[in-house]
Amino acid sequence: MTPTPSDPEPVTGRPRVLRISKSGVVTAWRERERELRRRGVDLTLVAAARWEEGGSMVSFSPAGDTFVVPVRTVGRHPNFFLYDPLALWRLLGSTRWDLIDLHEEPFGLAVAEVLFLSRLRGRSIPFVVSSAQNIEKRYPPPFRWFERWSLRRAAGAYTCNKEAGQILRRKGLRGDWVLLPLGVDVERFRPAEEVPPDQRLRVGFVGRLIPHKGVDVLLRAVALDDRMTAEIFGAGPEMDALVAMAGALGIRDRVVFHGHVDEEDIPATYHRFDVLAVPSIPTPGWIEQFGRVVVEAQASGVPVVASDSGALPDVVGDEGLLVPAGDADALHAALARVLDEPELWTKLREAGIAGAVRYSWSSVADVQLELYRATAAPSTPGSAGHA
Image 1 (cartoon, rainbow, N blue to C red):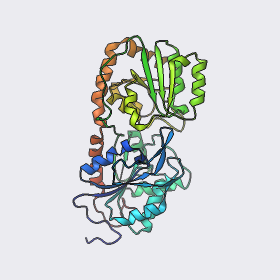
Image 2 (cartoon, one colour; image 1 turned 180 degrees about the vertical axis):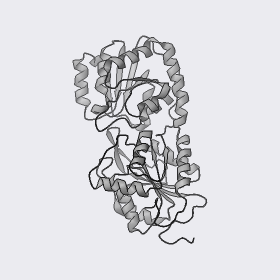
Image 3 (cartoon, rainbow, N blue to C red; image 1 turned 90 degrees about the vertical axis):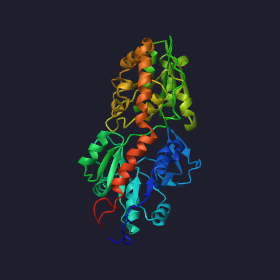
């Protein structure tokens, strides 16, 4: 069949992919795209020019990535924001794309915006969407309509946890689906010298200081054992309340609040800890969707003790310890085991280092490339899988 202006050209050689991900604002997280380009994908990435990550605003830095187009955004909610429509309009018309990769939730405004502009452009381009939403929710109009429209027409989807994929299927996804974890740079996050804890345990936390991250549970656990200290890296609205709580518990001298940590400093941050705590607490509207810090810490040779919330059991696996969410006594007991059983600390460290390989950017790119190959193939005009 001869391609027409509204149809994608047959995919030959290097697939031309327009990938859209606000998180591309973080330089280190663009390793996925770099790996895909090394595999022959002619990929252009649309990233937010400025976005909040880890509790602080991050501005785009090119860092030599000439394939990235930073675009201004309107709105700060991760699902209810828009990209500059003029910039998207130009990009959609600049190349005959074989595939659009929307690393955004299918009910989000950004997905609806891209698909609407593509339709206005008169282009029929296969697209895939992403999801991390592992609680089945019924959204009000128009978001419910956006979700139904995108899922029924998507050529495929990828999710960072299996529950999200099952939810997409139940909500009408017809295309291919793959489980695609968040990646880690195993060359950047590397183990330091093996030094088991002795008499004192340095417990670390990295993340936003918001209620459902459970830092208050960690503080109560540390307060139960004067052999433990805590280093809290992150910013957020709970900072003042948590500092006050540490004082009220009488452990202000054993807890250090470091505030926001720059992305380039995160690998060295993990080496300050004997163990990483991920004490997340489920809420009616949220449970842990992946837990990137788990993989980063394990790749760095730092054992992990986490709550059994959401996707954390799958990510932690047998390479860490799990405790009931919100249970400070159980968290303390698990941390005490890491301190009192040196052989356990060594076992968890070695298992974590070995297990982190499956989350390498190379592994992530291999899975994503297979999805691209399956979904970018030409199909008949008007069929499912086109914007």
